[in-house]
Length: 216
Image 1 (cartoon, rainbow, N blue to C red):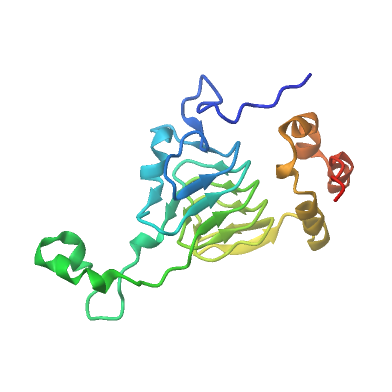
Image 2: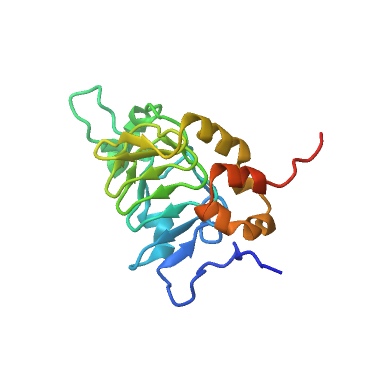
């Protein structure tokens, strides 16, 4: 009987320590990652939380769905990187201590865009930068080196700085069907039976392969 991959294994490719599954790696309560999402980095993939999620002081969260592929150097800039821009200087004096810290109220209440959310089945290419509060839709692809400053639609392909929509991977009708299928929520055993359909089949094939919906 086919056996699914183990989502709890940190290094799913024993001879490639550069690849880590993120769910068993992350410890921050501000980061949520779905099963099977992985990060690839030849330097130190296990340092993802500190090297790739920057200025993460909260309360905004980083949420990454299931079955996402993150290329080397993908970085998430969180809202802690924000500075005041309404005065003569943008310098955050209170953060450096001394009597400057008496003015920490000047850094509270800075505008934020909320959680950063990456959907399921998303591919983020090498060196992608995702800015605070962005939402990247299911099935999206972000090209190498892109700087994502605004939301990405489901199954959109974006690239550039700032990233712009280049095309969508499927027609509007097929995107609606794929979102309804939501294969990433299937049981792992069922996914295992239909890996070839998921990787090379049609939307019609995937609909036929979907498990029966439970009756209400």
